[in-house]
Length: 215
Length: 273
Image 1 (cartoon, one colour):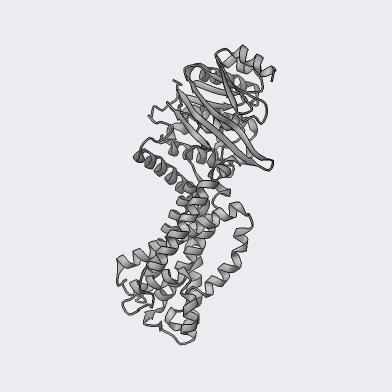
Image 2: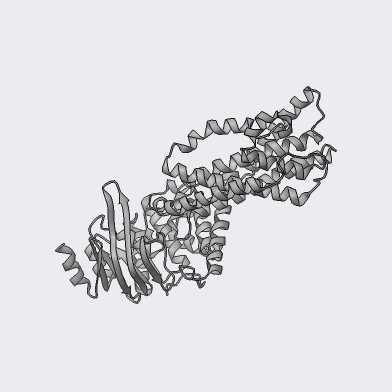
């Protein structure tokens, strides 16, 4: 269960304040996968970051039950100057899990071989995505916050990534943003639509996509 | 449940103070281990450099004092006298610089919800403090073995002074970090000031060496207080005109208050970018 209680989030921009969430109160059950819809710049990523507690609301309160991942933007999220192993060590330590076990899991899953010792800034987008998914799978969350499913590199790994992601989508709760309505339809049973600071919940993805196309 | 390898129970937020402290402890210790890699590297040569830099500076001043025919200064053996000034000053200067630049090398790690800019500042300050204590102990300990330094007269007082010096560096560094976030050129603007500070912080002279007209001004400098208080705790024969920690504590508390206030208001902005 993720509960938003009178949540307002305002950013200062050069054009004045931008309201991302305007006094939103909503309870979101985490037994089903949730798609998050909204135009570019509506604040989908901000909503994810608020749920992850990577940012604090301007006003109001967000309560989460269960283990929530960091926002998995598959392209980024690592310290580029450090190697994958050092990043894995760091993340394992902050979540209080044994880094050797995490490393073993990621080694097996991501098939990065000796690249694990290289700085992450030398990685391709596909390699980062593998590492990111492998690492978040190893730490085991109840709720995964996924900002766009990436396209990942070679054919062999793509199949592997797809099946791991599908498994994840069945076994854990996903919060997924995507510009691709097919992947929202495929993975999600519920949806949230974010328009002009208002967040509307739909129990049916088709209704949500329909409303989304009429913004 | 996903079939991963772990089954550790945790929540994503802390509902009690002790939980919050556990999170913070994990994050800060993970950051310290991560910082050790960049600060000192894997080879250990970095550790050697951290020792060599202050050691060379103490050596140069030691040679200069000897050339002037001095064997001690105001009742203090030369090496520990110079170390209390030079090593302390370099530790404060180094810590402030390290904190002012704490974010750039840790930006990727701020993605993780529990990692705040304050954590990176705390981690760096702890690492710098440990380095300071180790370097100071090695130089003064070495001098003791060569019969060039006494045993500290008031070891507890020495620890208090070291702690005060690093608390000053932490609060000052935090403020410089925040102001550098607001005006990116700020850290560069402070560099000439630091060059001036080297000559006005009682690094290689004592407050008593100065005429009273100069002392009035020097006593505004909090680093003077830290170094002088350290000397008077270390040497039984040295009495500083600085007679209490009051001024230093007021400095630390006010700068720390400002720094923490700014960190709190900048935190979200830093984490977004």
